Amino acid sequence: SLEGGIGRDRLNGGPGNDQITGGGSIDRFIFNTNQEFQTEDVGIDTITDFSQTQRDIILLDLTTFTAINSEPGTGFSITSEFATVTDDESAENSNAVIVYNSENGNLFYNPNGSEAGFSDGGQFATLTNTPELEAEDLFLRG
View 1 (cartoon, rainbow, N blue to C red):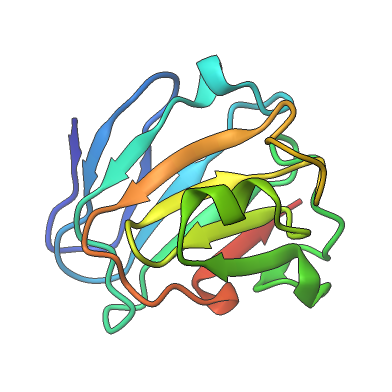
View 2 (view 1 turned 30 degrees about the horizontal axis):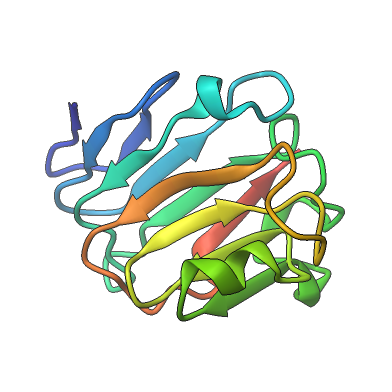
């Protein structure tokens, strides 16, 4: 369990499943294992208070999320690499590499695109307050 304070926090859950609360101000929820994505290394982190009004960011490191071809920075330079769906089954069959289920807050890495299943990817986070997550809420770090 990780908890931020009232200032700007950089929270990286590391390996395994974690509950992460950012607190007040701008928070960065970081997903980086310094190696290619493996479900057992990343786990499924639960983010309890993602807030767009506080300008929180989900940071995805391109060393971990190797199927992303967008340029580093805010959002996705290749817009088709991010999608929002309303059920987990649609996430498995999406063409997008990063897929968000707006009904339950699950966030997925889908490196094999529209092929069935997630291949070497899978769910890596749940946003319990189910915000209307947009591509601009994610930052890609090269």
